[in-house]
Amino acid sequence: MKTFFFILMLIAMVVTLGVLATGIIGMARGGEFNAKYGNKLMRARVIAQGCALVLFALAVLVGSQD
Image (cartoon, rainbow, N blue to C red; front, side, top):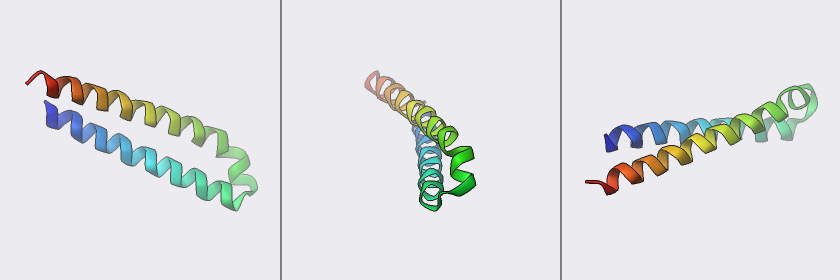
C-alpha cells in the first residue's frame, strides 16, 4: 500500500511539474496562449500540487502504521 501511494505521489508531482513548465513557457512567450490559458494553468497547478501534498500525507500516515 505504501508503494501505491508513493507511485501516485510521483505521478502527481510530474503532473505538477508539467503544468508549471507549460505555464512558465506560456507566460514567457506571452500572446494569445497566455491570455487564454494562463489562469487555467495556475489553477491546474494548485490543484495538482494539493493532490500531491494529500498523497504525501497519506503515504506518511500509511508508512507510520507499519
